[in-house]
Image (cartoon, rainbow, N blue to C red; front, top):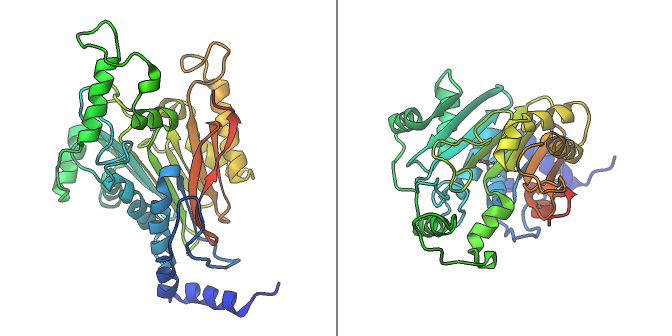
Length: 358
Ligand code: GLY
């Protein structure tokens, strides 16, 4: 097939590792929902980053690292840290919504395709970079999953700074929840109508929050990371799917990478991200694999989370890439978007879905 001189030149840059030029192209503006970043044209190397809708900047950061020859997992963690730092994202890291006692407890996992190793952390308090703690567990120990006090002590040992993660915004949303959750408790209920739910809470209820980011790098390796403050106002100690390898994240360097956001319990009960990757291994496209697992979850969910007519009253979203750099996303309910950054630049796209919301 004919390839232009420009295309050949760009591919050669990637192959020889002289990719600073490509990296600097990432300085180009990426607009919400639009294309603005680099167009690396290559048929043999198709690096791509795919993320939940809150991860557009994260995919941009990840691809900057990838285009400079970096590793898939280094790229994924550097990307999600942008959301862990963002006080406006009430589903991740600093600014995440707390548990029912007002304490922010974070969950995260990483998985590295080339070594098939994983790290995870659960119910971590006072440390904003749960993703990085998970990565250090993977890199520096023979273990996979640390939780609670032990995870905090581990993070301290590796020099992580402790801080109060509860922002004023998250505290006031928690207070709102406490005052509105029941008519039979000690608190006056200031809000009578559900229409009055603060926008950030409505967003959280609708989308579930969390960030998952999966990366295929220029070496053809896959890595992924999922990080979250978990279900808002959860029972203290509740751990969702995000730090559970196979549920909220799974990577197989032969087949693909997948991760999830949304209601974690149903993902845990179906080993959902593992199943998405397995479906890709059996030949399904990433979107079809994500749809098949959404369908499986709906079929298996018999108790709780259902409307009277049997329709799901919850949502999960899956984000997947295969070894060839094809990507896809599907949700149980309509209305979700995801972020992707590939040779056509960074953009938001609509997820495939099973049911119309509402
Ligand atoms: N999927 C995030 C959670 O359920 O905690």
